[in-house]
Length: 282
Image (cartoon, rainbow, N blue to C red; front, top):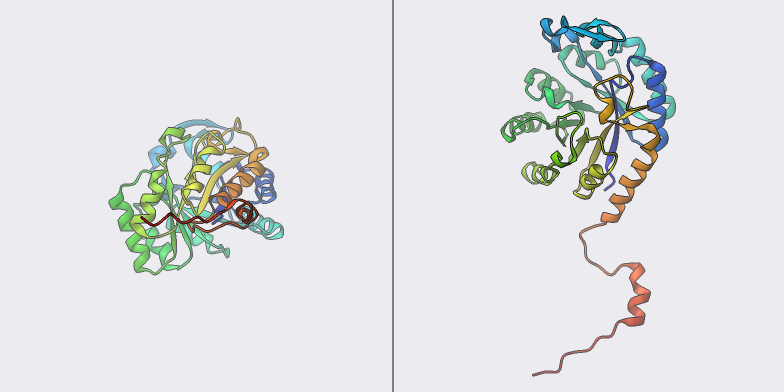
């Protein structure tokens, strides 16, 4: 199975629609299935003392200034929606709170995505599950018991979901990937399991995840890893996206199936070399 490929724009657009469109165009041109953003209502997600902390950024001198500069509103998302429709690529956004979820109802999004950090926000989870829309659920920084509770909620709501193995460090070191959890999650929950990556390396972790049967791959993308932003260093630059998609697709094809049969490509060799000789009876 070829994984569903999600290009996570996230906040790497730096509040600039021109950068956003360049990222969307690059993801579409490379062959990604979807692009994704993040939507937050700052006063619902962050404590006031956190928002008031000093923080130098292109948008001001406080954390609030910085985070507000990275948030798109209705005008920007309508332009994103139209741009994606014109190109023919799907888009969605991770809602971090109930107000953000309500905001996203302005658009006909094909799926929801829940960030690892929101797996303890059960009013939000219940509201998402109640929509009955395919939902990707990242599982970084969570215990098995916490995942159990989330899975049960979605099962009771009869909402289709796909777990995504994830390590919530930015950037993640390759040796922390622990990709065996993909198969553990598949076996424990009998569901599709993808991989959401934040590593510096471009492709090798995602290739291994694909080989383990990941049904979706999500990677942050950027124009340039040296740009301003906390997620840029853990992203794939647009110049590398075509190769990324080609390698993931090739890996999926090479995995084949578990069925053992004589391949069509083997037939001429078999016809030439195969001989059947019975053992002599004792």
